[in-house]
Length: 132
Image (cartoon, rainbow, N blue to C red; front, side, top):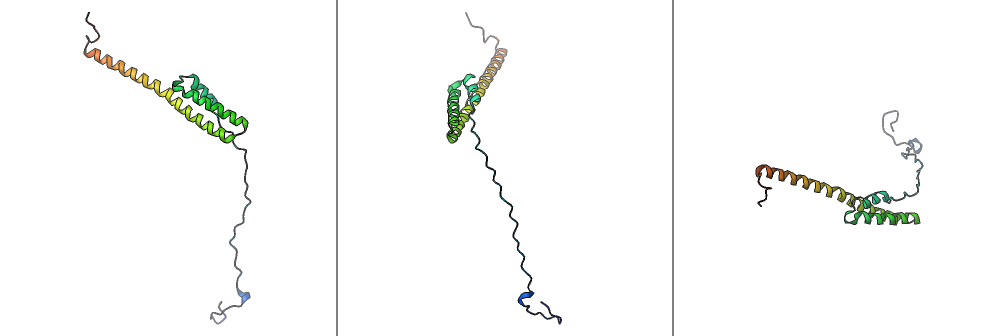
């Protein structure tokens, strides 16, 4: 502190300004408790994959896991229901990819075969004539 003559002096204990607190006002924490979400069983997707081109029985395996997931969900074991539902989802994805990719590959092979034969026929018109 400076006195009237401009010299610095040490003040008394009462001369100090109180230190202000930098504490933030804490707001109350609100926690919302929701009931656990029921795991999905993918039953309709599994039935579709079972009925439509059930190649390699992947749709049937997905259907079996879907039924297990639904049974566990009804019995209240949500962890097991989630586990079986996850497996059903994986098998459904495999079955769907398999059911889409295989026909597309077969169609592509058929188209390329027909195009190749038409080119061969144009170049060699006697190619299809069999000697008798």
